[in-house]
Amino acid sequence: MDDGSADHCGVTIQTHSFDDHEVERLARALSEGFDIVATTRANKRRSILYIGKRQLPRFAAIVRPFMLGDLEYKLVPRRGLTP
Image (cartoon, rainbow, N blue to C red; front, side, top):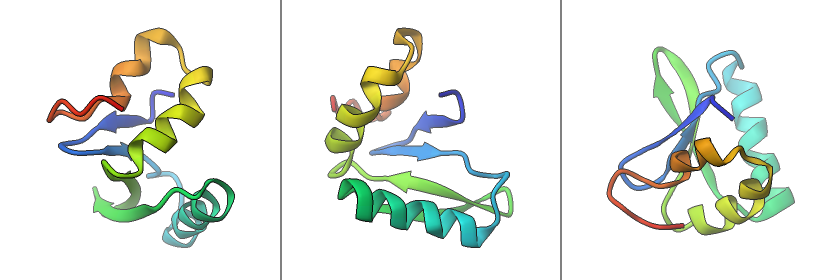
């Protein structure tokens, strides 16, 4: 739960311990399994997943029941979008 953060308009999942191929695979799994479009971004010379504001409500609805309440702020982008 702690390996992600709010971004300006969406959220990121910090996948630094995965290689680029594995991050692409995670993005495909989100697309095929949950109909969530996630893109990859470079961060610290590694790839991370980014889930934009249009996909965020669906993503939040799936993960929120499994999150600790103290970490739900990570689902609220810095620009104030409420998922």
